Amino acid sequence: MQIGIVGLGRMGANIARRLMRSGHACVVLDRDPGPGRALAAEGAAAAGDLPGLVAALAPPRVVWLMLPAGAATEAAVGELAALLAPGDVLIDGGNSFWKDDIRRARELAAKGIHYLDVGTSGGVWGLERGYCLMIGGAAEAVERLDPVFAALAPGKGAIPATPGRQGRDPRPERGYIHAGGSGAGHFVKMIHNGIEYGMMQAIAEGLDILKNAASPRLPEELRLAIDVADVAEAWRRGSVITSWLLDLTAAALAEDAALSAYSGHVEDSGEGRWTVAAAVEEAVPAEVLTSALYARFRSRQDHTFAEKVLSAMRKGFGGHVEPKPG
Image (cartoon, rainbow, N blue to C red; front, top):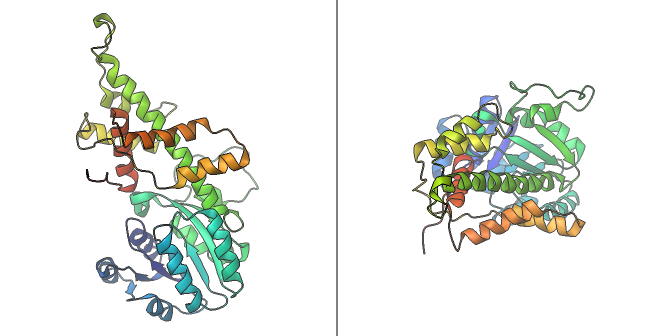
């Protein structure tokens, strides 16, 4: 299948590479021509602008946007709305707000263009590990693009089958799900990222307590000198909290137990805020997720070891770098 990929940053370029590995043909575009040239050397066709990308695709066309949420995505959707034809499919694989997806799908449907919102998780490791995909939109378009989603998803791998799933949709077992109508894909991804905040915060706070078990504020006879890096490594193997986040944390601590390369300034990319807003709208208590978001706000004023752990995890899974001071 032929597909256009717009936005060749940390994830977009590797999405193109993973698709090409499965035999799909990619036409790629980025405002920086460098990534396009690199992918062209690997077999992709590089376009210079959106009209050129659309012209290089055979109808019915498929265009996948991998751009920052907000103005950049909105502008690209607007331009492509005038370039694509009835029957074409436009995919937003970034982290757009789900209510924007509902509006865009309605506007594009009036032109006969399908719109899919695809929450994409996998970060900088997706090329090798695959991407967990949460898809929103009409079933017709989702089913038509199943070869694309199947190529990007991790597959069953070595994870044991969940008892009781016989006869259910097989796609979730392979790492991708048609979550529902327009907006559902990014809504599920938004909640995924909100949960991610909470899990990261729990790991970080727990390790901070372990690190401070030797604090001079404690009576000397109650102080414990605990190797936090070794604890994180041990927890990776057979413990109830084994996870990829813990893997990344253990790797960062093994490299530098003090995490001295991190200030502890922890950014948020917006999905945590939207998750809390959804909880308010639905009147659903979300104490852990809300507290985790507020902890990130506080980290920009005062830093702890826990926040250094958070920064290390964010760099590990997404390549996120702390902002420079000032």
